[in-house]
Length: 254
Image 1 (cartoon, rainbow, N blue to C red):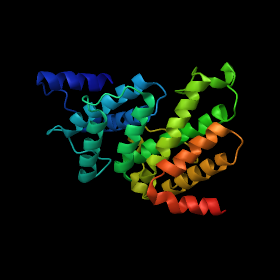
Image 2 (image 1 turned 90 degrees about the vertical axis):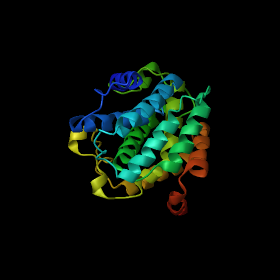
Image 3 (image 1 turned 135 degrees about the horizontal axis):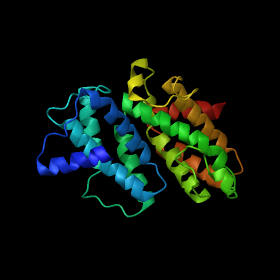
Image 4 (image 1 turned 45 degrees about the horizontal axis):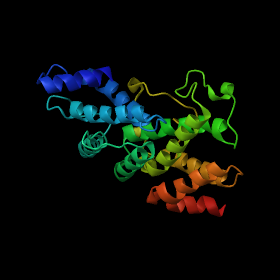
């Protein structure tokens, strides 16, 4: 965010020294992933800051002297920039957390594509969704010891905040499943991008990950945890990208 804030200030002052070079492209690609993941935060101020950051990142990538992003095609980059600027539009004021999430899912659901950045975001969201399940599934709040994850972004959150985070992740994963519509290994982020490696996620085919997610969600529909049932119902009934409906039906028939 320091980089983006400096870019914003320089942009306002008409300076050009903030234009990133090729050696900074990987760093900004990681920023792209981090900001998109932060959109699912249970805390609205963080979501709003991430939305603003995406708009500034689009400005940086669109600079005439900036090299073209290496993680997507020129057409994909154009669509991404338009999406990022719309998400962070300062003219749009969203007061409620739920309305903010609905708007972001609507925008991302329409524009998510099988490109390197979107796939990296989906994999990170799925990883977080999986590690949160043991801490939110059930009808009673967990103890403070269970709510803390050493070294994770969810350490020290209350049960209610963990549940909100899990809800956001559930719906976002369903809405943006088209990020996994290609199994082309060329979409895997290169090592210099520094994205985390998660066994069973980073090394799995994207289409298989969506199948696993849909299976996980359907399994949760069959539990006695009513809040989880309702959230999973909305995920596959309202948010799931249409392309994956046949896969959902296939899982339901098993």
